[in-house]
Image (cartoon, one colour):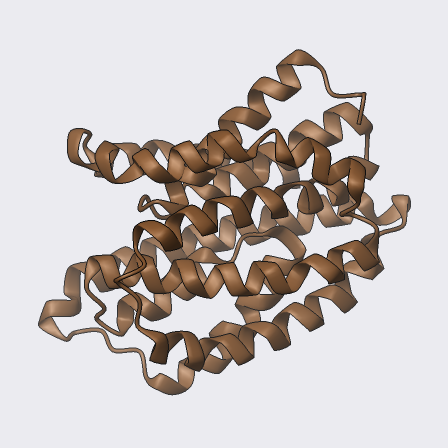
Length: 259
C-alpha cells in the first residue's frame, strides 16, 4: 500500500486512536474511524480502496478489543454475550456473502454509499439509545428479549460490511439495564469474538492479507493507547460535548460517502 502519503498516515493514526477511545468507554466514536478509513483509502487507491478499508480496520479493531477486554475483564455479563453471539455470527455469514457482490470495481461506489447509509442509520439509532438511557429508570421504554435475534443478525451484517455494528449491540445491552462498566465489558467481549470470527472470511474475500495486516500493525499502538486512556479522558472532559462533536463529523462523513 505504497500509495499512502504522510497525510493519509496521519489521518489513519487519528482514526485508530478514536477507535481506541470508542472501545475504551466512549461509545459511538469508532464509527467516525470507519468513515475516515474508507475515505482515506479511496483517496489513495481509488474505488478499490473502499473495500480494502474494511479489511485494514479489522486488525485495529481486534487490538482495541483486546485492550478493552483486559481493562473491563471483571465487568462482563456472559449471559448477554451467549444470547447475542449466535445471531451476530449468522449476520456475519450473511454479510460475507453480500460483500462478495460489491468486490468488482464497478460496484465499489455502491459499497461506499452503503457504508454511508449504515453510518447514518447507526447515528439515528444512537439518538434512540440516548432516549432509552434517559428514560430507563422510568421504565417508559422497554425492549423485549426477542428483539435480540434481529438486532444480532443486523449487527452481524453491518459489522461484516462496514465494521459499524457497535450501536446495535449497545442499543440492546442498554435496554437490558446493564450497569455502565458491565455494559462496556460485555460489548467488548462480544465484539472481540465476532471480530476474530471475521478474519478468515475477510481473508477469503481478499481484503485482508499480509500487506494489509502489515499496515494495520502500525496502527495498533494508537488504538491501544486510545483504549487505555479513554476512562481517564471521560473524567476530565464533558462527554456530552465530545459525543456531539463526534456524531456531527460522522453525519458529515456519512453524507460525503452518499453524495
